[in-house]
Amino acid sequence: MLLVSIVGDFHSSIFPIYNEFKDKINYHIVVHDDAFRERKKHKSILYSLQKFNEKHHLKISTEVFTIDEDSLQSIKTLIQQIEKTAPNPNNIYINATDGLTNIGIALAAQLLPKGVKFISYDMYENSYNITTQEHIKTNKLQYSLSIEDHFLLKGLEIISQGDKNFAQKYRMQILELFNTYADELEFLKKDITHQTTTYKKRYPRALQLIKSMGFDIVKDAAKITGGLFEYYVYLLIKDMGFDDIAIGVTIKQALTSSIGVTNEFDILLMKENHLHMIECKFRKMKKQEIVYKYASLINLIDDDSRMMILTNDATYRHNIYDEKNMTLSDYRRAFLNRIALRGSVIRHKHEFLDEVETFFLT
Image (cartoon, rainbow, N blue to C red; front, side, top):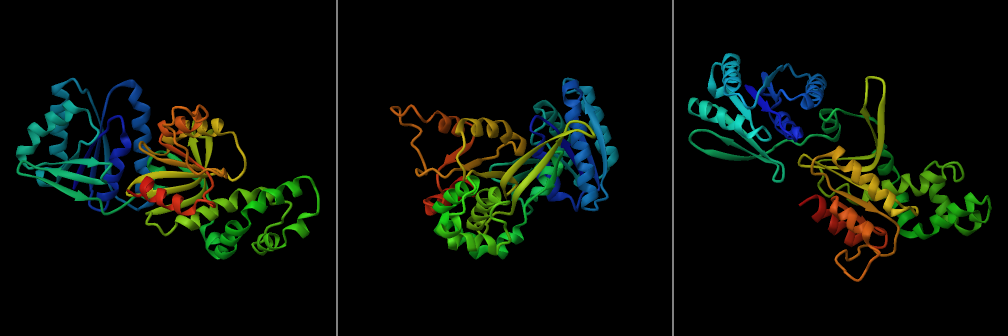
């Protein structure tokens, strides 16, 4: 099978199709425009595909074809290269999902009558159409990218992540700690911060649960109200039907071969090739700062990623359309950037779970 991927603005649209057909592909031609501003992006795509092939032990011969989108002769040269690589047109699939329109039109006019198949991916339905001269057939993708592969193909590296086995091992302790003693945790942390010892008498059961998981109540205070809260949220949602979940993920975005920028995400959720996020902010924080931060990062994760920020506020959800309430600018800004800013999941567990279903899974 020869797969021809025409790269456009949202190049991540080629990855789900590449993953779906990876075990059938023998040859892969990546087609991109010759504009200078696009070259760095295309170089990154090729490097990512190479790493993906190495990881999955794929012997796929890959080549690049640089095209002038405004030149019919350039498109004809591409057609010659396609037919030379795969003489049997029944073995040729062209992914024109995100390609430049005139390239797709010109290729279809020449190649559809010969039996070549055209693929168009619908990211919202996680399905793809195969168009031939005779019919259009819709197929649901059978395979979803793992979170690790998603980042790999985007040229991002996971350098660390939390241990889901820890959450499962101490499931009962984590659930009891937050379901029953969540209100005590902030007071407990304040006692420790002010170096008082009253917490030993005031919170005996909470202290017992924390110690049973191997934490030092003084040295690991930040992990108790931060890291453990991530595990708590993970335990609430882990069986809801996501294809992949990762906790406490640190990713690196390379600037050069030796310099990069790291970003941390509390919970990442993959569903049908869509990667989403949940940030768990149990402690008090400035909402404006956190919304600005993640509004700038959300597209780094995925072109259509959604995000939920969980705080410990008593009110779970505000009416952002209330014209009389002038204090909701942070919530409105979050909404406009595909971010749901929410209050205490502990006090509003059922509302949270219902929203996870509608916000991330449907």
